Length: 539
Image (tube, rainbow, N blue to C red):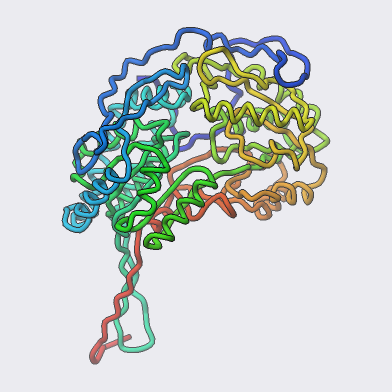
């Protein structure tokens, strides 16, 4: 097994050196879209793809503890983003399958052992599952990379260990959830009970399939709920594998049900189901609106949403430019740029702008793009043809709006969904590439001159998921962290995702928080119990 790097975070901080690149190539000239801008280190993308040795055995729906075909018998292809070719055909769930899964979850909650067993025993099952994840680290990582396209080293050394860490974290919370004894004005004994909410519907995205599984399933199980989870149609494989391991760890049948399928059918049926008590969704803001509407129009079930972002990354005039360049590069290009909190608006103070720009361009040109199973690759393919074409359209929009294309701007190779690391300068706030979530390897660099100015511009967006601040001045850092309207502010670091740190957005970036103690409240009801006291000795 590959050596693991796990400190509870996926992060790049001041102390880390720039990622090494297997080759450094000559620079090109600035140009319009479609011309050769830069020869990146991309030879790996042109080779025959490496076929992982992992065996794909779980392709059916998981309902009531058993893998079963969809009611319709339909399947859909899971595609390899390196080639666009079929990896496996997976059962396609729809409304009838959601009904079956919800019925199983309801029976498991109303009649089964899960909410009735001691919290300590639930904790032990989650801990056994985390141990199984460690044992199957390489298989889970291979499936995640094969299905998603992210570098295998990222999957194996960071994301799968983090997946296990999250479940151990929530296992630790299971037997520490309790209510309060509340003093009242009068002869009454008042207590609050924190009760599981019931049957939970969860819809997870394709960019971090395993981690989003953990963010949703971990707190819901720790608090005693039962679950129907719909995986993303682009990445169904690891959810099924992980659910199998959970049952091997002792999870009772019906507690976790996994339905693979499409949003307009399976996802809509889950969000609008009258016997689902709560829905949690991660994905785009536009889809989040639909989920909330369906939940409201059905049984007014509560909803938590983790949605899109257009996060500012602010480089102040006192910054160490070399470190700022590396951190800003990581903030944007990590996970092929397919990260909801990506630092996708890089604001740089005018005094260091020119130096930063040249170094940011050089760093992007060194980024290694290729088969994510090959050692040393920093960037794999985008998830699918739809996202690939969308990113290229945004790049075209940037050129047409007269931003300067410093490097990249084109596809890589003739097979798969690879895109060159792309950098735009002279970006204005009203440009589409500065306003909308690109969700790809496209860095937009904007200039500012005053802290008060950058605060207004950074906040001038419908999103408020995250922000990055790079400065050596504590007063500047304090000013920015309090003024920026975002759920997470990273100071001299980025993408730190410790299990205990809450994550969620302001404005149209979502509702509620995931991870940490705050996530437990998403899956609990608070009940007040008031009992009259007769002749109490004290109040």
